[in-house]
Length: 176
Image (cartoon, rainbow, N blue to C red; front, side):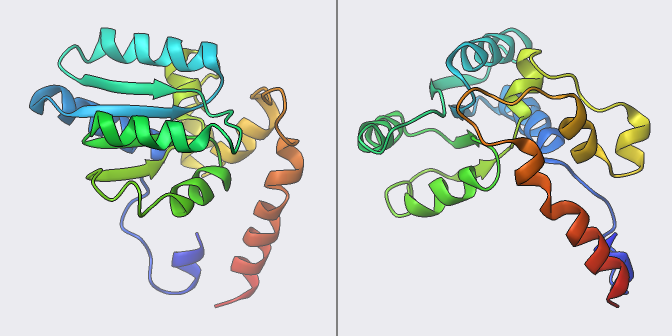
């Protein structure tokens, strides 16, 4: 929407979830290895189990939940370095995933692709239902998640974190 208002529309919109599914599909064909970091322990296990079932040729280089203490981080980074995955999928939610990746980018330089996928592992595991097609068409997946997805224990309120989105929409509408 913002790109359209600025006169430079993006040809298509691709969500992190859609991109992850496409990468898993490609990884299944090409034998890529993935390391999954994020979500809670039970959901992480379920997501990897589901991925293994749906994409049997994907190599699981490792996984860890996203509730890390600062003291645990060096060991997790070392584990990822040892695993040498083709792709590191970080599902700690925004902005935590981005900040974590940025903080460790030098140490993770050997990983070919690192990206944050928000709540994608929650959807794969079946903890969260994907937004219905109409919500997607209207670019309101964020609102669907805000209204219907549970907030993990120990996480800040989703309402507070997503309060910036209506502000962004308003600014995009008034600026050209």
